[in-house]
Image (tube, rainbow, N blue to C red; front, side):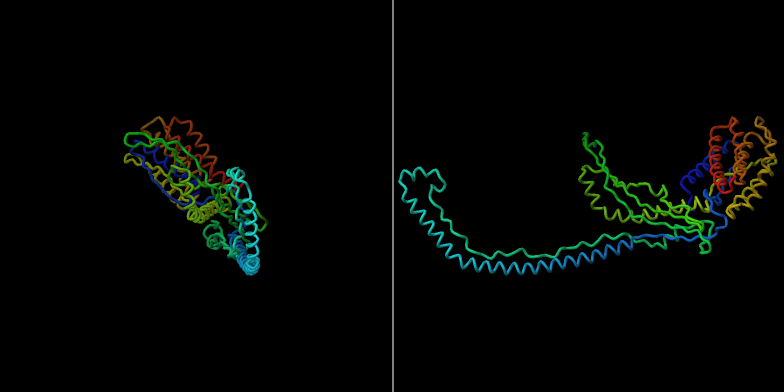
Length: 455
């Protein structure tokens, strides 16, 4: 069963600390590690008359894809129409070119004769120049002689052939199984799927946004054959984000319609390794981009929908969580600790029934039995008397067991008083740290209790 990240770390922290403080060198103390389920109260409780819910995931990907494909077909039709028009224009241009060629061929002999005649006339003029003038013209182009500027023989000027414009297929949006997503991720613990006066849960999928890669560099040094060689290493990370809007609606109206902050955060895909040139890292991204983005499509849905589900259950539902804790029992052949062992058995039975209902009716009966035993035993506490039945080690173990028992029995004022009293003891640092973690857990539980019961 999943536990919220913050709460999970707190539970592990508490359990870890709980093991060590009371593992002291006393042979009379024994740590019993337990794992049990409990029902977490919502921070934003709904009307207690509501018992059912309906959930769905919506996306406009299919609608967008239909439009993209329709536009694609229209673009192909337009490209074909343009091509056919160009073909018709080409045929007309070719025919016109043939007509021009025929006319130019008919005119060519006259143009050629006129050019030759002009050349001959210019040569006659040139030949009439004096020897002195011809010598003076030596510095001119072609020594001042006239050029024979004959017309080019006519040829067919073929127009450019038309071609069909390639219309690239559109990049379609990823389509997910929306019904499956709703069934997997939009579940409200403690409620039943039903249509009778339901809470309506809707998650609207946004598109995956992948931005330009951000490149950084760092001066590095490599060593070879006993020599150092400086080089610049390039690193890249690609920002991406997928927003999912959550809407929670009761029969009396919408109570939430936003993108949860945890989902709205920008994430980064880090390019593996370092590169010795910026070009190489850009080329690596261009080569792998399609595959990486495809993986991010599914990854962001799974991750963000799980976050949505956690947000939904933490705020509005009765989520079952798993807790690991430690209960300290006392063993001594010479001293009777059967009362404390009975308290442990009562605690164990109570903790194991915490998940039966959020009011913890059956669990509280057994936990209250244990509390009464521990409170009575503390009346015997002699912190400075090592030989006392309830000496310092036993007293501290009772404080540990009793504080958690108070929390599960919703006696938060007593838990706070017990913690305050414990804080006055000259207890080892590891004891204080463990109790501090337990105190923080108690405050978390009380915040939910107060939000739910209003007291």
